[in-house]
Length: 279
Ligand code: PAF
Image (tube, rainbow, N blue to C red; front, side, top):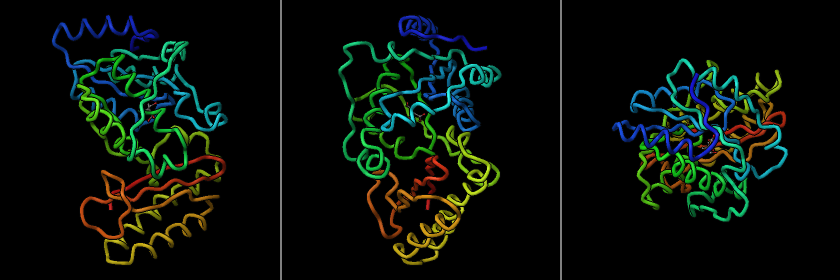
């Protein structure tokens, strides 16, 4: 089993020892409820770094809806068991007061890239993410950090944060891991009812069809309108957005010049799913 560490001073001591030995340190930041997507990040870290830390912290600052925070799955024991065979050195799972002690007053805000899509639908979400990620980088002093491309906008926010603050950590974005039916793996999938789980792959399927149509030259507004309708027809309750954006700056685009991403968020049976694909 990996060593479970709950406070920053102990973590610092361990990492200082590794660094004194010249070991590269990789970190995989998570909120727990681990699945194969997370494990693929851990394997990538393991491949690159002599030492691997997985952080497990359900960060209240990035939840804009209190009910969402309450029902977020917490499965630390099972998570540690999943990590054991992967050669993770440390699981850093701090209590909330270790991360946000009384008097905590700093917010890290990455403007621009945080504003559309998730930022527009979850006000304050990326301030919470950027703040905790900056702290996790400070606490772990990792040389490398691994994030899933499933949270594409988050990945761009973190890249911007690292560049803007000259943080000495190299970010790797790892490919989205999907179930056999195309559903992107997510800790939230565990909250889907049987019926909702059966409908959920329709989001990715609609996105793929839309991407193929756009690549084939069909007009973007019409294709995106049809994709939205397809997702709703499949049984989703709401499509918050399904849009074509430039891959790095996330600006609206209506044609394929340069790298383009299709990104979507939709609600099904009270669960909010997000996905994105290259077009
Ligand atoms: O992607 C996540 O699980 C979270 O947003 C992260 C990066 C661990 C920050 O809390």
